[in-house]
Amino acid sequence: MKSKFENLFKVDGKFYYGWVVLLCGFMSMFICYVIKVNCYGLFYNPICEEFGITRTAFTQTNTVMTFAMMGSSLFIGKLYKKFPVKWMLTACVTLTSVCYLLMSRTTALWQMLILAGIQGIGWAGATNLPVTIMVSNWFGPKVKGTAMSIGMLGSGAGALVWVKVINSVIANSGWRAAYLAMAGINALMIPIAILLIVSMPSDKGFETRVGDPSPEETKSAVPLQRAGITGGQALKTGRWWTQWLAGAVTMIGAAAFSAQFVAYFTEVTGDSNQAASIYAGALGTMILGKFLVGVLADVLHIKRVSVLVPIFYAGVFICMAMATKNMIFATILIPMYMLGGALPSTVPFLITSYNFGDKDYGTMSGWMNIAGNVGQIVGPTVAAMVFDITGTYVLAWYIFAALMLVVSALYFISTRLSTKQIAEMGFER
Image (cartoon, one colour):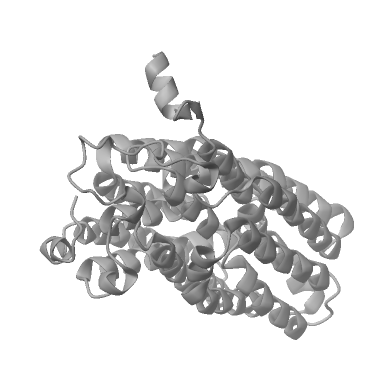
């Protein structure tokens, strides 16, 4: 047991600093991801009422923000490769916090749209991307899934805290005060990044990573941190585009879930506090869910997990639709979300590392963020349009359930495509 413990937490006889970096990744998800993704839906009702606009109109703030994220994601991964992670993350978090300060003073939708566009540039480098890069840099393939899940489960823990806090601020002091609160909470990540994050193991004197196979276990003389193919090579494969499409379709449903959940259950229950509690309860299950997905990826293999987890997400949407008839389904969806909700923030990045290696991981991770951005534009807009036309979200939930089954099929196909082509490019498992 001592030997296993030392192999996990010690390298070259000293504590492995990658665990500190992973804690920073956890905090990034705990703070930034939750503030950006999970608290957005809390503002639909109060802002639409004050500005006198439809939900479809307010959804365009998310659309503008996401287009900015898409454009930024084309180069933000490369910037993370060029500059130290701590300074890139600090710059991105600072920009998003300043935008929240200014949003609290807006008096019209067009002002919010401009700020959302600027904020999108910062969000491209302040949520999933830095965590996936830190894990890719610091942890080898034997524990990559578990390490990724530990970093990502910060969002589940954060949701238990910040969703209720921000909802309470809105209820007691209004949405403008809530934006100020989010600016301050988001800025907590700045000193953490500056003081603790180190980009590469070599910067701390480590030549090998926790989770790397021994020289006897690997056939390649190439260090695993540099094994794989380039982003340009990946773009030439069917595997990449199938995987990319799976990521985009996933976020169509996931973004609608985050944006419309509280508004939907407020109408179903007639109580915004109860709706926020159900939402926080579902998000809180990801504390365990993301960890389970990561461990399952290491034990059962990411190829199997990527097919299984979307089926749970389909079940979540079916339960949401059925909740209008019986609220027992609101209870059932919570444990189903434990695995299903972990899909968007774990599977796309683990499958990228498996399919293409770590050689150009930062670039490809940024491109997977673009896939997610496409889904973030489509999902909330479709859900809001369905509501504005039909007066209910139920049809939208059934559509998203069907799309999750499509995701399962796409991931099944992606890991089986282009095997020979990628091997000829110099990378094979």
